[in-house]
Image (cartoon, rainbow, N blue to C red):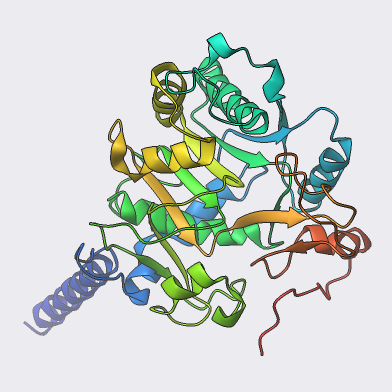
Length: 354
């Protein structure tokens, strides 16, 4: 009898351990209400960072390709972004920029027959559409599209792991589901670099990334960002469905998203310049779009040192500057190129804590 009692106690203890583990696992994979903000604890437990990191921390950030839009004559910009990418472990493919004056009137979509846009904006639209069409032609599952003056934090590969967890949450990918993309299944556009964004109407789900030391303190942020970020802790970054962004410094497109955009912004019509048209489409005005963004953004336009017009191929009136600058990026890759080449670790922090 003594041996039977000991045996029964052992079984009871084993069952208790199994039940405890089961409860903990279910607690970690629980979801939050769509009417409240995501708690930091839920965020940290939702997905295994290690599993996502394995898929994302490669040379294309978990996408099949990274394309850079670059005018053929702007070898200076190509030199700069190739160097920045090589120093942060990224591989780039280049998509040729287009001069708007070479785009014939008869090839413009409905809505632009009378050439409402400037030649520079027509060229920008055509270059973006050529790249998006290339995703469809090549059958790529996804691609990240950068403008050639985009800049990013040296820690980008760590940053996008948290973004991916947020994206999966917003797309309702459960903790037990293994998506085809590390960013989740069902997205059309991931808008990673913009110059303005707001929270969307009708969807108050927000995924909070706490204590992200790559995020500047709020007093450094632009007016629009500051207004939004006042609701959240210092050094927080938020991931949410697209509100109303503009500027396309960096955005990713899935294969299905590329098909939708090729139809919506070229075959069907075009009602404005590319970034405004993409924002309008992403805001739920066409083809049941699914677009995710983040604030503050992960990419921003780098303003190069040099004379007037050095930084922009669209706006030649941009004044020159003695030193380069990238708004909102703490450890700017562009501004730390020399330190990265020399193997130095005392990186320039453009927005040190005060």
